[in-house]
Image 1 (tube, rainbow over the protein chains, first blue to last red):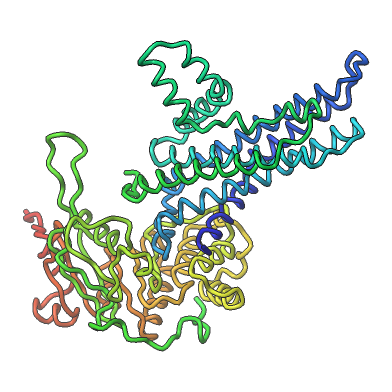
Image 2: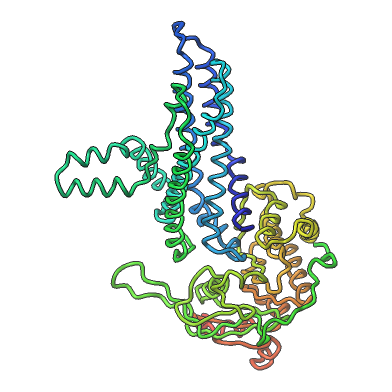
Length: 260
Length: 269
C-alpha cells in the first residue's frame, strides 16, 4: 500500500503546483461573490438563485478538474517516460493504476471541499441558517460520483491514445448520463424491439451519475436524503470504480510502455 | 562528487543467489509484432544467454538496434519476453519483488520535473518502504554524494542536464541496491560529469555491488568493466573478461567491437 499512497501523494502535489485549480477556484469564487453581493430587483428569494448558480459552478469546476487531472496521468507517464524509473522499482502496474486513482480522487476531494466551504460561507451567511449535514451529503455524493468519473477516465486513458480524445469522449459520456440517464428507461418503453432492449441494456449498464445530484435538496432547503440511500449510492459507486479500474489494469498490464 | 558516507553505500555483500549469479538470462527471445497485416515481425533478441556474477562490473555492448535496450526492458519488467526467461537474484523478472534490490538509471532523465530532488528521493524511498528516519539520512547522504545539497529544495525542471543526471544517480541508489542497471550513464555528460559517474561506479564495485551497464564509450568500458558482452542483431557475439579478450584478439576493445559488428573500413585511395 505504501507505493499506492506514495503515487497518490505525487498526483496531489502535481495538482497543487498547476494553475488549473487556482484559476477555476478564483473564477467560481468571484462569480459567487458577485452573485452574493448584488440584490437583484429586491427579490427576497435571491439566495436560492445564488445557491443554484454557485452549485452549478461547483459541479462544472469539479468535473473539469476531475476529467483533466485523471486524463493526463497515464499518458503523461508514458510521454515523459517517468513510467520507466517507476516500474524499475518494486511496483506493479495494478499499484500504478490504484495510486493514480487514489491521488486524483483525493485531489478532487480537496478541491471540492474548498469549493463547498466557500459556498457554505457565502450562502449560509446570507440565508442565516447553517444546514451543515445537508451540505455534507451534497459534498459526499458529488465526491462519490466523481470517483466513478475518475475511474472511467483512467480506463479511457489506457484505451485512447490522446488525452484530449479521452477527455472529450468522457465529457460527453458524463454529461449525457447526467442529462439523459434517468430518462432512458422511459424512452425505452416508447420504442419497439430491438431498440427497446438495447435502450434497456444501456440503462442498466451505465453508471447512473444523476442519482448523485442532490442540488435541488440544497437549493429548496429540503430535508436530508435518508442515510441508507447515501450508503447504497456509495456502494454503487464502489462497484463501478472497481469495474473501471479492473478494466484499466487488464489493458495496461499488456500495454507496451514506449510511445514510439 | 563527495565520497560515499559510511553506511550509505557500503553494505555487507550478501550471497547473490543460490547459483551465485545476480543476473541470469536463458534463451531469451524478444520479437516485436508487425504493425500492419502481412508484415513480418522483427526479432530484437535471439536466444540470448547471459550470466552476471556478484561483484562484477559487466559491460553490455552493441551498436544501436542490437537488442541491448530490449534485453534491459525485459530485465526491468517493462516488456514481456517472447520466449525464454530472465532472473535477478533467482527471482523471475516478471515478479515486482525482483526489483527490490535493483537500482536503475535510465539514459535520459525521466523524472517528475515538478518535484524537488528531495521530494523525488522521498517518493522513491517510500516505494521501497524505507523507514522515515532512515530515509531522511539516506536522502541527506545521497544529495551530498551527488553534490546537490544546495539545490535540494529546487524543482528538478530548473536543473541543468548534468544536475538531472545526478538526481537520477541518487534515485538509483536510494534503496542501497545490490545490482545497478545503468543505461548509457555518461551519455550527454561533460568530461567532468563522466569522470564523476565513473568514480561512483568504481566505488560501488569496491563495495561489492554488481553493475550492469550499456555504453558506447568503449574506452570507458575497457577501464571499468570486468567482463563484457557484445551483441549484434539480437545475438550474443562475444563474451568474456576484458583482459582475456584483448589478449586473445591482440587488439583493443574498439577494434574487437568493430570486427564483431562486421564494420568494413572504406578503402583508402
